[in-house]
Image (cartoon, rainbow, N blue to C red; front, side):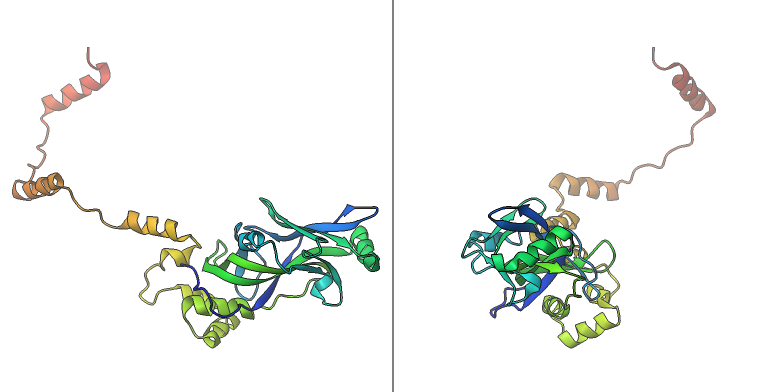
Length: 269
């Protein structure tokens, strides 16, 4: 089950991708690049839950031409590096994730030097989540899957990355579970978010809450588990079986047992 589409604009969020930023070209164009996001790779603990990015999460943004997406050093408005509008920022999706290249302005020569020296150790992307899914991950923690997002910016990061604010993600979980946000935050603080995925009757949670399956897969599993209607022949056989039960097996005589043993040893002629 997917979270409902929101009538209001979703809140911006940022996520860190701990992959190195590299110099892509040296010369007239000062170009650096890296992966702003990696698909299907669990994040670190974001506040008693983890997160993965679905491989189709950026498809809508890509189809729209990545409008108004920018690259900023450390997500700072004072450190603009490039924009998709001016084509100084280029974005591409491959099997690994969302890749970016940005042509640095001459005034940002220090950024190029930081990349060359290895001081810039990771990238990040800012986004708004339009559609997500929740389940339980392999580590037993609640797992959020970003299904469709609007990309806002990509950013190389210098120094140790800051700890991401999990409040927006917890609000998404509260909407998904139709639970008060205060209760969800309280469960997070007590390390008990798993309780949201446990039924009070002790039965296993629904398929969509055990693992972030898509709707078609979940429906197929439920249909496979449902009892199948009996055919007319099956019903007749069951009725006759109740009326004339099979005779209980009779004990074998010594002669019958001897014949079976000899048959196993020498087989048919």
